[in-house]
Image (cartoon, rainbow, N blue to C red; front, side, top):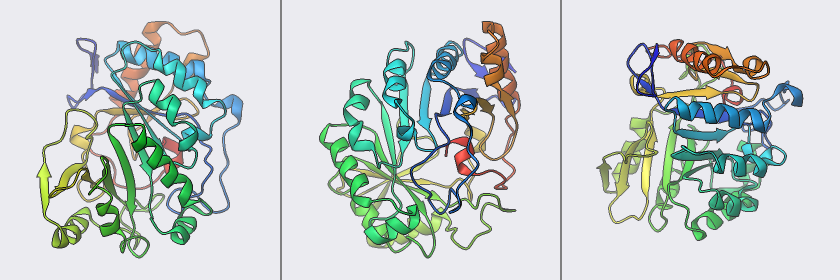
Length: 328
């Protein structure tokens, strides 16, 4: 493992240039594929990274060639005074790409500050366009709150806006066409994501799983789909398509049926300060303890290098963690 020309190169020659940051493990929803109805044992406030510590991590990551950052949770907009962190990150020099994944419930309250700090990309989780079904999936969420937030985002001219749809057999598989139609007159990407059976022996071990190829076939029967080359920024692991004549695009993420580990270029920072090498396997480095003991730059660099060295060539394919633990 080494830093080469201000970049981290792992042992499989993947250049690490992205960091996902979970700013909290709290969430205002309890989506059926993410959290048990009874709730979770959550970290105490003193055990999660402060905003100053998060910024310190980002500042050092930039020095190591990591220029793309995504804020996740839990629900990032649910953390108290999150606007303080947003402004702090907006002033960090060297960030080329700042993104956020949100469930959209509080989005309308923060669109102006997100626009002001120069947020590059915004992913909004939305698994149903049916009011009653949405409440069931989220265990109490209000669909109108999310739709109002999306409307405000589009009104303010945000670019690179994505709607994340977790595809679930028997839950929302009758809505794929309706989701795709959102792209006809809106400048956004509707991104279908394969359901991952967390805490199961295999990621596809539950009957809700639908292979992404099936979804592409379903939509292709009623629409003329054109495959697109991925853009330079923000495409990640998605295969992109466009309905003929549509303003927006469709994205398909096949994390289960077609793992993209060979091109994985990210690390993950949990709310409790663990620097994780992989969503589903590998190990982690306790960065919080290092941060709270007056570290040298060399010690911080070593923590990133150790985390990168733990990245596997291919993930284990077993859902032995919960989504909230690693920020989605």
